[in-house]
Length: 116
Image (cartoon, rainbow, N blue to C red; front, side, top):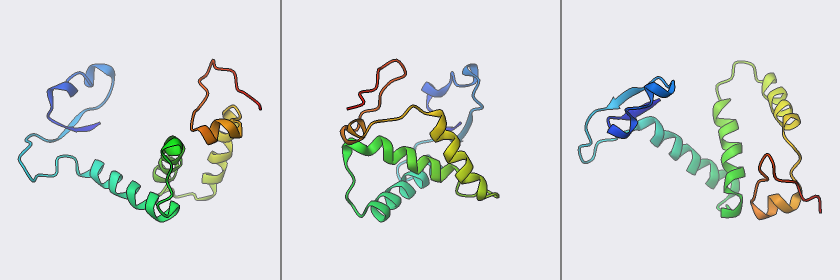
């Protein structure tokens, strides 16, 4: 995990994360986390470009899931495996009815799915 030098991140090593401090100071005007800013910038550009500004707050979790999938696989050496991974993930998940998608709510692991 790459972070700034905020003391709240000091326990990450004990939790099993590799912790790398990328900025030790927080001077005004300095970009503290350039990679995080890049991801946020790409997300905004993707949302505006793909969805043409018609982004619903009720569906933001689904947009973020799709963006994460695309971002994590953007430099894949084997493009054919992308579709295979997508199908594997679709099979591993429980079906989500249209009413749950329209409402922007995801069923939890123990929550029964309303099939109406």
